[in-house]
Amino acid sequence: MELLPSAHVDTFCRDHLPPAEQWPELTFDLPGLQYPDRLNCATALLDEVAARHGGHRPCLRQPGQQTWSYDELMTAANRIAHVLVDDLGIVPGNRVLLRAPNSPTLAACWLAVLKAGGVVVTTMPLLRPGEIATLADITRPQVALCDERFLDDLVAGAPELRVVPFGHEDTELESLAARKADSFAAVDTAADDVAILATTSGTTGRPKATMHFHRDLLAVADTFSKHVIRPEPDDVFTGSPPLAFTFGLGGLLLFPLRAGAATLLVERATPAELADHIAAHGATICSTAPTAYRAMLASGRTAALAGLRRAVSAGEHLPESTWHAVHEATGVQLIDGIGSTEMLHVFISAADDDIRPGCTGRAVPGYRARIVDGDGAPVPRGVAGRLAVQGPTGCRYLADPRQAAYVQDGWNITGDTYVEDEDGYFHFLARSDDMIVSAGYNIAGPEVEEALLAHPAVLECCVVGVPDAQRGQLVKAFVVATPGTVADDGLVGELQAFTKARIAPYKYPRAIEFIAALPRTSTGKVQRYKLRDAEASAAR
Image 1 (tube, rainbow, N blue to C red):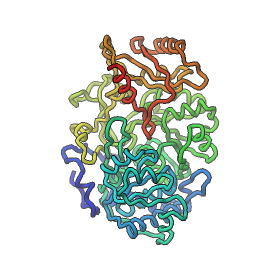
Image 2 (cartoon, one colour):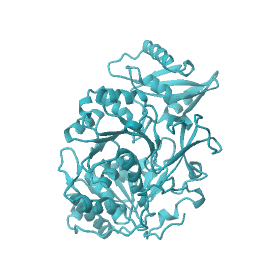
Image 3 (tube, rainbow, N blue to C red):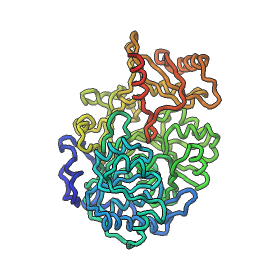
Image 4 (cartoon, rainbow, N blue to C red):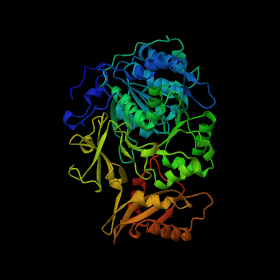
């Protein structure tokens, strides 16, 4: 696909796009996905929405803070854009690193960078200096805007980077912005100019930077959000994922802005606290991980979820038992979905009467999916294989040889093992590298996990294959027990018998270890490789 003339003066991103032959095929057949050649998504998401719905409408809320209207967010973003250009010398194409928990000011900074023609690199606030150094080496930012509470690790990890703190009216960014004009002429970027560099969460090895265009940020709102979530201007979105995680960026900023709705941004909350915020602020759409919904029920917060109109579950597989538990307790039908940082957001899902508990769903309008074998050839329905996806978004790694593995024959190969049934629904089996081969049997760890999670003593669990001289691999479960449970050998036997009664006996966990918490990335994904690596080291 031939690229449009770029507005970027700094051509770093264009220069490091993958070779054209390694791009996925992009499809824009769905009505509403035809975007103009010149497009600044910050203007489309903020200025145009304010003009259409009214700038006085509530836009961003934060517990204990005053609500920002669309006009107030626009003014803040415009002033920060002036600071970036006038005081910090940002030119179109420069990367700007953002470091902060979810807040209205972080959202304003994100929009300001795009208005100034820059490229946003939003980082998780919990990253440590070594991780920050790696991301800075990959993305080469010119400047960073950072919540003053999180400066130390940033300065330690990227000591040469110009850092501007924010947090209250006397910090540098707010002081500079207070002297700027309320209006700003957004840079006339191309629809295919890079807008954000979103880094993978690093469940294995060195993270990858995925490159997403201005039009991509609208496309995910015009597909999954528009056709599955179906938001309304009076909705109030909320959730737990950080804006640095594309699941959070979509569910907490792109989707509500595109719809003219409001968002409750929570810096950090336990599942129980998130449930309380939902009730206190009248949130109607929530996005979080399956484990969080399960923990809300365990904390007795079912009544707090009664006002939800939509509840989105993503980031990891949604067990059927969790879906039923939430529905029976609250009446809420969880919307499952699979997405990826490479694809920007969710591409398979289902809502309302289309939901089949335990099944991810069907291809989101605008996307198409199929199951392929190891050579990339389609397999019949009912046969397990690799999930391949195409749509208006797709994988473009920044100067990374792993592009050739993710995109094959124009399809995005997500790294998931799925089965498509006769009705076109996609059923998750495992991450492709998480399939366990034991005594000649192929065993999907998530299936064993789902069986274990049905037991009341299991709060969370992770099942992996560990080395075994006789079987090649042994199915082992790492279990976080529910509070107050006696985790002993007696419970091990009980869980094994329970699992055998629910799934084929050869799949049961022959080893169970109780642990205090599962290892997770900063986005909440379970780091299975850490459990596997520890077991492999112990076996040597």
